[in-house]
View 1 (cartoon, rainbow over the protein chains, first blue to last red):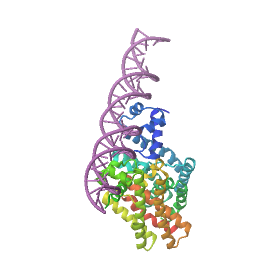
View 2 (view 1 turned 30 degrees about the horizontal axis):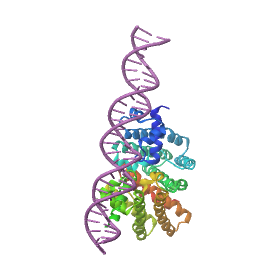
View 3 (view 1 turned 180 degrees about the vertical axis):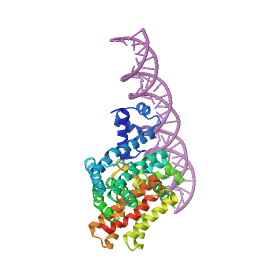
View 4 (view 1 turned 60 degrees about the vertical axis):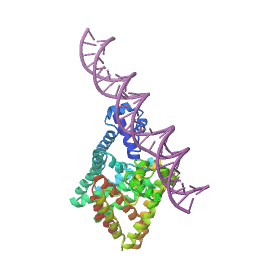
Amino acid sequence: MDTKALMIENATKLFQQHGYKAVGLNDILKACNITKGALYHHFPNGKEELLIACLQSMNEAITTDIVEIFQQNPSTLTAVQRMIEKLIAQFEREGTVTGYTFSSIVNEMGALSESVRVACSSLFSKMQDIYRGKLAADGFTEEKANAIALMMTASIEGGIMLCTTQKSSEPLKVILQVLPAILKEF
Amino acid sequence: MDTKALMIENATKLFQQHGYKAVGLNDILKACNITKGALYHHFPNGKEELLIACLQSMNEAITTDIVEIFQQNPSTLTAVQRMIEKLIAQFEREGTVTGYTFSSIVNEMGALSESVRVACSSLFSKMQDIYRGKLAADGFTEEKANAIALMMTASIEGGIMLCTTQKSSEPLKVILQVLPAILKEF
DNA sequence: TCCAACATACCGACCGGTCTGTTTGTATGA
DNA sequence: TCATACAAACAGACCGGTCGGTATGTTGGA
């Protein structure tokens, strides 16, 4: 693994878990065992450039990991359930769960450049696009597919937050049970 | 308004909008037009003690504001819809929406004391208790009331996050439309 | 007069970023 | 094949600023 990829990988983990401001450059350098000279060589515009690289890297990970789950499962419901089960397994293995978005930095976006918000927003949009595409293939109207995709995104993100707060995987397990109701009735 | 209450009020706004680490003591002092001596007089144990005071104050605000909405509305669905409408109105008026929890600090809890996580978790629990109580009065079984309460909490928090990220009130509006489906089918 | 409430200067630690020096890798020419 | 030159990649010291917290001084009210 080259140095730039190592930095992106470690920074992604740290930013997702702790947010942007709470993770200093020295935390990232320590995790990678490199120095600031190397960091500024690859990211001459600094910390924010690194964050944007992490967001773009996550965008690509969605394209490989999530799209694959959705292609392997016959319907939206089973695909989303598989995905949630992976999140639950992550929580039970590591005690933390981060998903494929950067919800941890959402509240810090006001202090960062617009390109950060755009890159972060595009992660949520991409998840919703994947859900919506599958829902349409399941036979839902475009309007309903849009609404359900958004509801799924919101409730999964909220569930992740509750797991973190309550130190329990129970919230995501409950969401796993309740989601079928939306697909049936809405 | 006394100095201590002024600090709690301003710190609450700042912490909810930007998180804990991203808000420095000087930001709070500037917002209140006081100095550090006054802050440490009232909160001798420092920044974290102020945060916990904010969390406790929010706990009391839930007791007055949210419980009132729930008492004034005949069913859980209408009460939750009123509440979401207030959040949407806040977003449209101010460009930000914070709700009654401190989701902004969830990812920073690992670096803070356990009492912070407990105080923060109690806000989410209190919201869920209010929903659950009303759902039980609506005639839902305890198990279903629990699950629906959690789903509501998660989806509203997720919706707030998406509003912030997308700079639009549309996510909360969609959740407003989808929530009835859960009550009908689950 | 005393003390609560507040103001202000100061402290060491940490912050992101800058700058200079060193090492490594690669291409070229003899 | 080896020497040389150059640039990419990296290391580490340094910078000014901000951070939360400490200590001392001041003010106003009882």
